Length: 163
Image 1 (cartoon, rainbow, N blue to C red):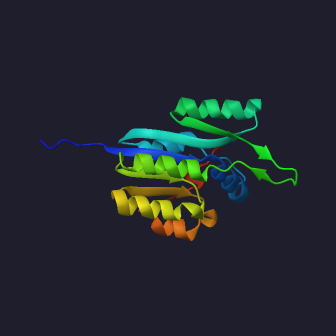
Image 2 (spheres, one colour):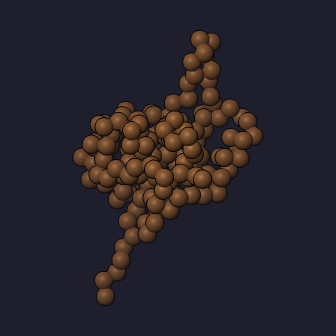
């Protein structure tokens, strides 16, 4: 009898990118429970991380606790408002470091982000570690270069939104 071996998956979510793109395109929020089911079904989770900024407000803390209850390790950076009105809260380098670390231990890397800066990262882990990649992003707001590098592109649409 052949044994069905579960593939190992590592999941990474660029929370700010997903929040702003789903709000902008659909005027709705991303459903992290539905995403978790889609990304991890019949797979062994190596790690699941959500990268967010923190302003320290109660609503954000409740959201972060929901992510933890689903199964995500939540990494936070302070939200920085500059004097000129611009803001900073970018996790690109942190996500990249973690993806490279866990790609070697995974059969599949799932990245929820539409940020084209990750195209080189996805290309690197496919080439270096032969790891399959799944990119979840809002189709109209996901960089073509990122879609092109992914083993599979999974559109964020009605099926992955709240309400």
